[in-house]
Image (cartoon, rainbow, N blue to C red):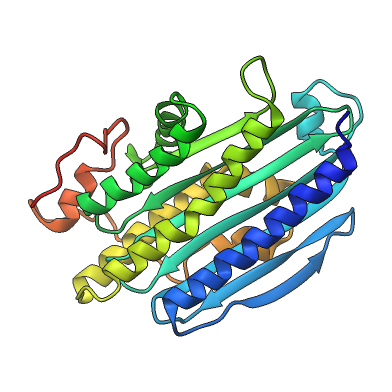
Length: 307
C-alpha cells in the first residue's frame, strides 16, 4: 500500500531539488547574475521559495518558483469535483524567463502535483516557447526535444499534448498563438494504461528537459545583433504575453482570485512592454514573418528549416 504522506514529501523534495538544479544551470549559462531567494510562508498552510534573476548578461528578468502548500480546498475546486469539504496539497515548480536580446525567446515551464484528502490526485504541467522572432531551426529543435521526452512514455503524448498547448496558449482576441506552443497537460492520473510511476516519471523528465533545452537557445542566440526596431518588436510581443497571462491563464487567474502571493503570481510579467495603436509590421519583414507562424496546428517536425 502506498504511503501517501511519504509520497507527498518525496514529490515536494524532488521539485525543490529541480528548482535548485535549474537555477544553477541558468546562472552558468547567463554568466552575469545570480538568483536571489525569497522564502515565504502561506498563512493557511505551507509556503515556498521564489528565486528571481535580474539584469544578467542574457536574462533581463526571470523567476523559478517552488511551492508546497496545503489547507482547505478552495471553493472552485470543491465545486468542480462536487465535494462539500476537502483538504488539498499542491506542490510544483513554475518558471518564466524574459531575455534581454530579442533573438532569445521567452520560455515558460510548469510541473505540478495536486492531491485531495479524499484520495484523488493528478499531475500536470508543460513547456512552451514564445519567440519574439521565430527561427525555424529553433522551433524544430524545441519540438524535437519535447517529442523525445513524450515518446519515451507514450507515442500519443506528443500529438495530444502539443494540440493541447496550441489550444491553451491562444489569444482569442488577437486570433494568434502566444508563441510556437510546446506541450501542455493536466489532470494526469492512474488508469488502466498508466500507473502513478508512469505519470510521475513523465513529469520528472519534462522538468529535467527544461535546462538543456533553454540553455542551448540562450547560448545560440544571445550574441545575435539587434537594434531599436527589434527592441520595439520585443516590447510589443511582451505585451501579448501580458495579455494572455492576465486574461486567459488559469493559474494566474486562480491565484489572483484566491488571495495568492501576488509577487509570485506576477513574476511572469516582463520588466517592460509596449502597446502601439493598430501596429502593423511591414510586409515581408521579419516581424510579419513571425506573425505568420503564430497559428494553431503547425507541424514543426515536418516544416523545413532554411539551409
